[in-house]
Length: 304
Image (cartoon, rainbow, N blue to C red; front, side, top):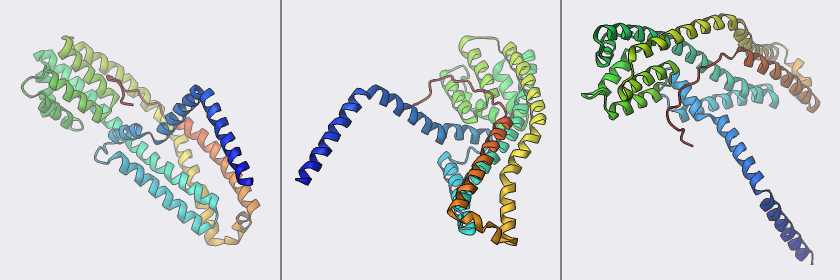
């Protein structure tokens, strides 16, 4: 009888669950889509690809970068846990190392992007001068491939190679789109759009390039001024991530008995709350120090 009663309870719960799921199917589907979207944003493989491309690290596969970043963070967390014998510190070490690796990539991305965009602006100015004399976009690209700014000269050499014998053809436009996606630079996006419209629609290229140069010159000037204002906050964010561990390592080496109260259950709870409060302030400072990023052009629908 107990087994029959248990079976009836299980069947009843199953029927109830199916009924509730049927009634709330639309809401559950909406929740599932939101959870999947949040999970995709958490992993952000496309964002990582763009960051690696803008940092000049296109040779590193996205899965390899994500795996290396998580692996370093896990190793740091395991070392901190084993040394301090505090699970909370192991978790914090994981988060800090994971964040610092991402911060290092962001710093490299900003520096590489700034150099590339300055070179692209110089190339656009040089291209305008060539177009003003010859009026030929092909001659402009060949001149930039031969004597353009060193930072972006390989890009124009690749574009000229892709153009082949018929730069106005659809094959060249597709190759140009492939190069644009690989470079993932918003300034280069604007230049590619101007070239594409010039070859497809016959639009005038010189006024378009002049507008791009004028707009981006002002944008880069404002970015340099904002960087000078953010530098102190950015340094504070990095120091706040490192100084607590420097202090704890010093205590562990000089006076490990001072950390003994934190190894009790109550001590770990109090320590975890303190770390959580510090992380909250750290997150606020980090958001304050994040620079605005120029959005890229989406010339085709993203693949789901």
